[in-house]
Image (cartoon, rainbow, N blue to C red; front, side, top):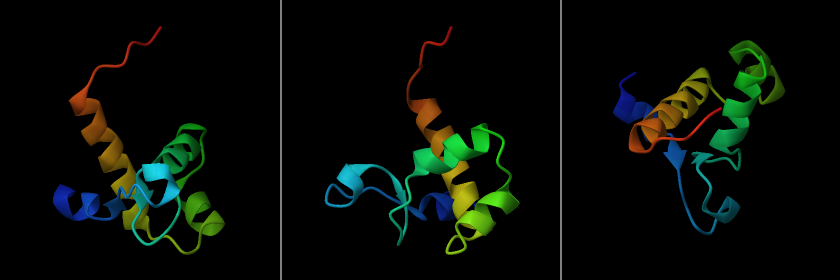
Length: 77
């Protein structure tokens, strides 16, 4: 799936979840999925925990995170 197709799975609507980026059609924040992946949860675990999601939704969250990193630098350490 192309990057544009993945990113189309993410929505930002000021009237839904305070305007936080969410997976299209759900109120699941992109940041939640990225946090869970960072904590060691596997894609398979996420799909079991959130059966309404598809693997492409998880990949869309990663693509969105990568896109945001291209936009600014965050100081670490």
